[in-house]
Image 1 (tube, rainbow, N blue to C red):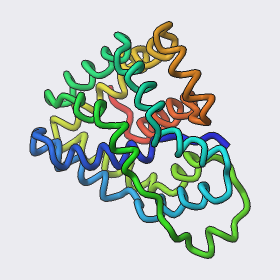
Image 2 (cartoon, rainbow, N blue to C red; image 1 turned 180 degrees about the vertical axis):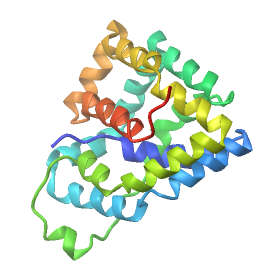
Image 3 (cartoon, helix red, strand yellow; image 1 turned 45 degrees about the vertical axis):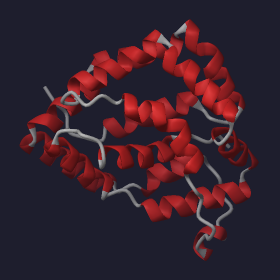
Image 4 (tube, rainbow, N blue to C red; image 1 turned 30 degrees about the vertical axis):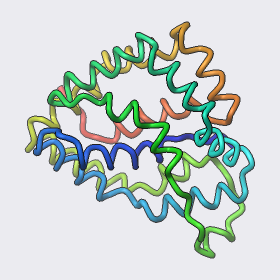
Length: 214
């Protein structure tokens, strides 16, 4: 089953947004969302997939390897990917996400899987994908409510949220997905059971959980 690094990315984002010099209000807003993520259960889900899913194990070993670092540098250098970084920086109250992007290989390599899995999870034998299991674990109703509240009460969050919902952002991502310079690293990720298209699909699905905006 396809593995996605997205949950590890969530942890990376959490760590960086909590420590770097980003606007206090926006940082507090993001922390509120992080608090809703059932990180302990997600860790258990990852450990379960590591036990039962050989493709998941392949993906985990890949993101811990020097080969992934090389692949990520190829992604990082592509102009269409840089355009996405610049877009998020512009609408994220000036927070330069370069720190997040450049530290991704190191932080993924350092992430440790749980050594224990609850019995109720171990007894399950159904495997969809790791990412889908994670998405089903997220409190969607509470996330929607918090997004709605933040859009109303936080101008900085509203600015970033509207930018991520804007069709311009989706067009930037789709252009990067089709970029000739990114085809080789994307093939490498897919070969290592990291499904890039599934990751992008989930990204926009989660963004769509929030309120409609004009």
